[in-house]
Amino acid sequence: MTVKVTVTGAAGQIGYALLFRIASGQLLGPDTPVTLSLLEIPQAVKAAEGTAMELDDCAFPLLRGIEISDDPNTAFDGANIALLVGARPRTAGMERGDLLQANGGIFGPQGKAINDHAADDIRVLVVGNPANTNALIAQSSAPDVPAERFTAMTRLDHNRALSQLAAKLRVPVSEIKKLTIWGNHSATQYPDLFHAEVGGKIAAEQVEEDWLRDTFIPTVAKRGAAIIEARGASSAASAANAAIDHVYNWVNGTPEGDWTSAAIPSDGSYGVAEGIISSFPVVAKNGRWEIVQGLEIDAFSRARIDASVQELIDERDAVKELGLI
Ligand SMILES: NC(=O)c1ccc[n+]([C@@H]2O[C@H](COP(=O)([O-])OP(=O)(O)OC[C@H]3O[C@@H](n4cnc5c(N)ncnc54)[C@H](O)[C@@H]3O)[C@@H](O)[C@H]2O)c1
Ligand SMILES: O=C(O)C[C@H](O)C(=O)O
Image (cartoon, rainbow, N blue to C red; front, side):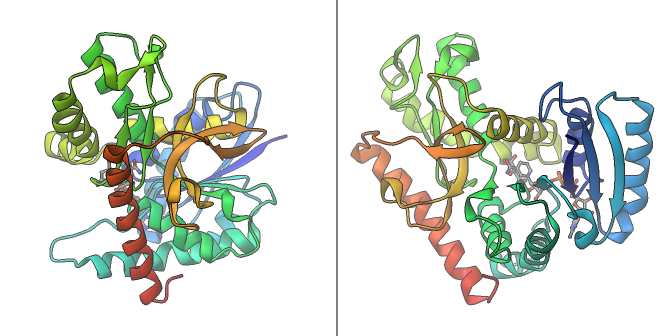
């Protein structure tokens, strides 16, 4: 079966890093043909057309069609996978409420279009920031779609944490298992090494306490800002790579003996307020995310998880007040 993948913000920098990898088979696997649906604002449709010309010029064997639209109802029609990348960035002088309002104007109508037109098996990954709360807005505009199909991306944070730890311990990334990002895709996120394993032993016990607290956690949590500072633009190829990882695992499963991180609607596990879209340790089985249960959370981790979850609750309350959910 050909899978229809809708990408919003298709003419943006993440879109450019993402589309070619989807078309080459890296999102779903080498046996799954895809149709791409590109959603853009009217001013950027021409640029999306240019990207589509380049996609054609790659002659990808799995790419069965490209559609371009500025209408969400058209772009999500029959979609099986939706990657919501396009968002309203914060600009100078913009208050937090203005940012949430502007994004509500994007993710509300897109959620409704998904509700009304997407395929029954639609799976949604929100990348555009503030990703967790944008996902909540889209989800609340799609009452007919199971809530669990709306997710937000913390896989980039997860991959950043893997890489930082691998460099510290001088091991390949593949040696690290069971790392977790908890909470929001923001500077309050909590990268947890107390359950992560390296060579079968707990990672937190293999690093100095002050490195974990004063270097590792802030480096991972503020990496997005550090990339913007260095590149003059926010992360793009690494964000696209993480989106590929997230959807690939969601559809094809996570490897035995390991887990990953994804922001999914909370069922109340680990005391995280039910309904908010928060990052957890997760496995994917039979096309569904499941929260890894039974982990012991000590006081150090508890305080950090609670702080990030509180930020998500505040964001939820703010969008509720604005009538966006
Ligand atoms: N979750 C993460 O880990 C993560 C990582 C990196 C970036 N991001 C976020 O991803 C988003 C996109 O980043 P980028 O670098 O590609 O930005 P960009 O500005 O290069 O591209 C965004 C694109 O979205 C389009 N767009 C805006 N509103 C739209 C709408 N209503 N419908 C369809 N398209 C619309 C714009 O025309 C633009 O082409 C930003 O919000 C960024 O902060 C998230
Ligand atoms: O776009 C940003 O603000 C940063 C981005 O979310 C990132 O983590 O790289």
